[in-house]
Length: 313
Image 1: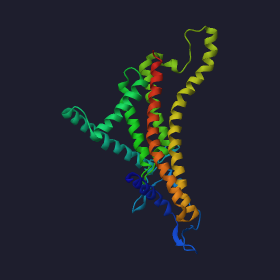
Image 2: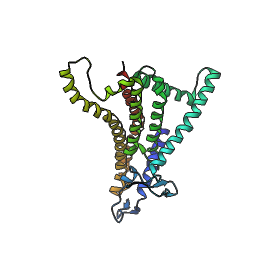
Image 3: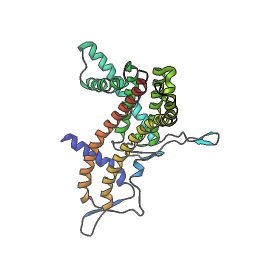
Image 4: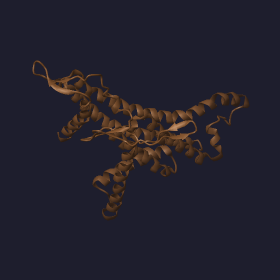
């Protein structure tokens, strides 16, 4: 009951910025409490799922982020000014440090004195061991411990970034295709470097298809057909990682915000019961999706690393 009450309160707080966008309360002719419509149509959905140079903070309203002079590289103009999603990424990184480092130190201290960790440190240890033993090592293959830190960083960073979008006045940076694309590009480089280390000079076989046990009359047409497929396959993997995370995190917020906006669309608080009930259900589903998408991104990255390393055996 306490969790449900807190979740409902958080949902109402999340809806507060929506109500503040140009609407004011009044009473109808029958005494029912309605919301007077704004003078013009106001977009109450896209500002909460797109990037911006402003932050919405409680009691402070919109806070403008600093704007820096763009950097000119030839004919290209690059704006390095911080945005809302950049701030959320920094917050996610800081949360990783503030939560994981003390948990690791507490785990080491408790293990040295009692032989095992308990409490919060024990919970983090269980999650870390699950990612290591059930996700990374079985998929990466032999000597997979070297890739565990990368996988752990991916998992917890994406998890915190996903969860930040579920708190009032927060924003989901992983709902930005640029963010998920960058995460996918980092995974792409790790995958390819892992292949180079495992295959050595035979790495070229992952680019040019050349079956060693076939006749030359079959090798040439197969190489001509399969080589473009091999090259395209290298880029479809990170593309799938980026689109999967971006689409899943964006879709949930669009549904949630659309449900809450029904209260202001109909202009009456009497219709709030159904949207809030459905919004609470979607919010609980979003908590699961935030964890699931971090898990899937880490799992697929581990699988792709294992696939390219397995080509050496």
